Amino acid sequence: VAVLEGHENMLWSAAFSPDGSRVVTASSDNTARVWDVASEDAIAVLEGHTGTVRSAAFGPAGNLIVTVSDDESARVWNLARGRSEVLKGHQNVVVGAAFSRDGRQVVTASRDRTARVWESTTGAEVAVLAGHRDGVWSAAFSPDGTQVVTASADKTGRVWEVASGRFVVLKGHGDVVVSAAFSRDGSQVVTASRDNTARVWDVESVTELRARAYATVPRAALTKKEKKQFFVSAD
Image (cartoon, rainbow, N blue to C red; front, side, top):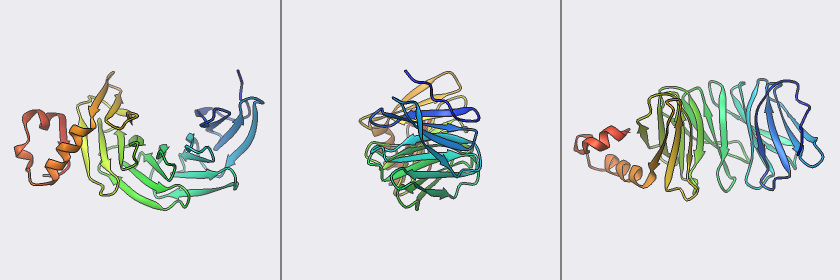
């Protein structure tokens, strides 16, 4: 259908706009590019990163793009205004990012062992989700935007409450967890690992367990199955 040529180094990701008319690409030439699929023309070159751009994605309205880079930053680009907000705070390569469903927030994943939540229009940092013991490979919002799921090289996934920073660890994989996502209705999470498996987790069960752990039930009162499946972040 189309060949999109113009980058000066290898590409790391490509994603469609919501209406399918455009594509954004991320490259080791330190840029992202926005392409018109029909004409195969680059309609915008997003310059500003000083390292490889690992990923780029459109927001739900199609007017914003988030990019992440080896320069330890992310950027949210407003295509109409022709400028970007720089999201600075990570201490290592930023490898992934995603918008919330309403487009108001962005979550970023970094090898600095954290995910961070930001306001997409101002670049203000909303939350630092810290607790993983190795780099975070991906992060995604729940459909309602109140939770984030992360995947980490520490062989776990985590489901976080954005407002409180509380989390439950999804423990069971035998190798790096490279990706995680909520189902469309937010009732389940799927994680993918280098251990050759994917696992599907019931979010309601995770939430119930977390509520018990943070309320009055000590960890010792959890069942053996619960202890094995979930390593809860509070005693």
